[in-house]
Image 1: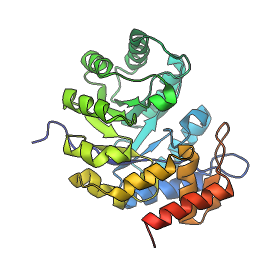
Image 2: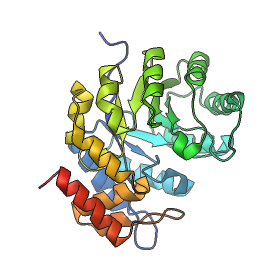
Image 3: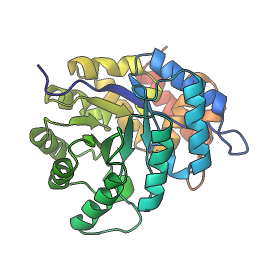
Length: 294
């Protein structure tokens, strides 16, 4: 018997914007519902693919409200990303999710100050987690050093898990470093280790990873499920990720969403991100069609 339950596939949900830059709530709800209907066990809002650092507090509350109004269960089908360097603002973002009944958060480290000692990262996480110690929220720590430039070591994860055993329930590993992933899996069979780099997903599942929070799930949950459910390799996924990484990742995923859906509203990103050019969209779309014809 597994020590902890399988997590499954959560879509790192892209955030759709109107031409004036406001949130397209109707498209958000439609897209979230389609991802769940296609096999995702949950959707994660306000993550990296969702441009969470560019979403205001007021918009966060409205987005969560729209998803709940569409019948999405906040306890089991919704994960809320946090994006703040301030302990107080992180706590406020968590409060919005908690008050909406959300059961899990995705918590990255602060990302403004670079090269800080690990003790500083520990104190930041500890201060945030102490503010929610009386809640029923589970925290998934978010390792994405390419964005935050504040990597989470296995020792830091272990210390936070020991201090907050009821709160720290998992780690999303988006580092793309297979040796780190192996070390994390060896050290933490007691946590839901979730994979963000889909190139490593099947191999990590075979070593005990519990699932993924995936940007590619915006495109084709059904293609990713065999990797999660059976640890089955799919070279097309590796090739597609390689093609995406030629461009800024979030605009590239949204370009593929526009390509697949025929809805160019998905091309819109918020500053400081910049949408892909027409030539880049065509290049990426051609790469996708070659791997997934029809």
